[in-house]
Length: 90
Length: 193
Ligand SMILES: [Zn+2]
Image (cartoon, rainbow over the protein chains, first blue to last red):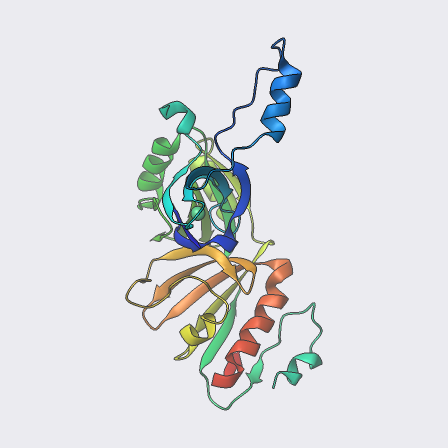
């Protein structure tokens, strides 16, 4: 499997460190139900057969975090973009 | 075939000499006398940094993994907003006086070892450890890459079509890198100078 890094170009997946699901969002720790929300945030994951958004770090290349859209059934990489700056664009 | 490697302490770079088959399929030369510094653009000041490099060094900072050379300094793109700078004595101070605070500058001269690699069988040799395409049709002079060779993290760039590749290797990994190189080039004849 190869991942198209926006800076480095196509690279073997071995150059990347996998973190996991890019769709979960850290809950507000001040919320009344924070313990239950954090339980879900830490432990509960969808396990989709098909396109999935994941965090990968190009640890042997440009050292940047990428949000990668990958089809879990075929390993097709649909998109890859830097995580940095994503918050500002959303 | 690689019994000769056992003659050398694994913690030291392979010394100058001729290794393996007769001939010079690969020639490796350690480069000394160049200072190295890392350059990281300060948040939101990358355009200011580009302007200063243009004014003071007469070059455009590469926006991708490429090399840009000016007078007594060159920059290699290693990541978004990050470069390696190489130059003569006093490099860090020269960069700091002209580019700070638009960039964070940190001396790396003791941290990285430079090797120039060339020879008619160099690409065949590197193919044993690299997972990226360095064919002359796609990796041109001025192109650079930060990747792993034989699982050792390196940054390298192509200086000319000869081809001469310059490798920057972390100091503590330089012995392992030199052993990979000499063992992989032995079938073509390897000269370390
Ligand atoms: Zn990268």
